[in-house]
Image (cartoon, rainbow, N blue to C red; front, side, top):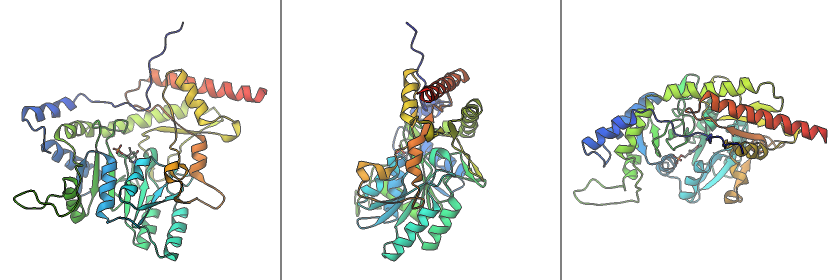
Length: 390
Ligand SMILES: *Cc1c(COP(=O)(O)O)cnc(C)c1O
């Protein structure tokens, strides 16, 4: 019997050791709640890093998207555009607001929202007199969308943009930090993200008034009165002072994590370069990709499916995942409208048919990564050979 090798996770939390300092300080001063200096510090540090005027620390990235939609007054009868190829958290808040998502396909260069499909959708929206109340753009796996083109299009139609940068903290486009382009940007500090607070999120914007309103809504929308008075519905969405302490330590290593993630990607790419069936997610022109997850495509013509590779790696106790299943293909959204990249091509569907995310945790050792590389090579090579023999 061979020993089961140790589990290699997709993207395990990677602590620095400094987290305890900020947590201890919070305990020592009994600043467990509410809010507190770690929350203020974390907000300031993220705002400064991203280059925006205001940041609001929240208990999830999903809450940040929800608040952005609420502040933009999205409600029943409204339409919000959202990429199809993303995590469901990008779109769920549209449903929270009783609005209707319309899904936009990806383009092949960045895998993100297709400006071509977006333009068609906007033209159609004008025709029926129902422009979207907001457009959510996602920077998938850390790669910036074609954000300039998208911002320009949306400005042309006067539609505000929410940049879902949950996966792209530390990335940039033409040197400008990811998350700073939209009217609102959102980040996530969920356990598997490039930095984590164990769970949390952030809303950022230069719009002081909108951010003050979001702050108000995030703490049960309490009126400025000497007693508890409320004029509208609010939420309990704030981040705790303990959790923010973890974030402050993690921010100190963000740039280092980006370098580590990029190194992991380069090693995969270099080591598997000679496997003709595999293609890695390219780094788009003008952008710095944080390589949150190293992602590749398996050439459709070789007959192997993403789940074949995911299952084969699972047998070696290695956690890999297929790329996000497009939202327009989800039972939850089966009645929603979808705009493909072109009449002939649905890019998100084809990326889903071929895409796999490999383990990309920054705490992974080179030896661990070699195990992954070896397993991928052995499986893909063997399976293709078998297919050719039959
Ligand atoms: C993780 C993620 C979110 C949600 O963040 P949470 O903090 O888990 O709520 C939203 N959008 C994308 C693209 C994500 O990857």
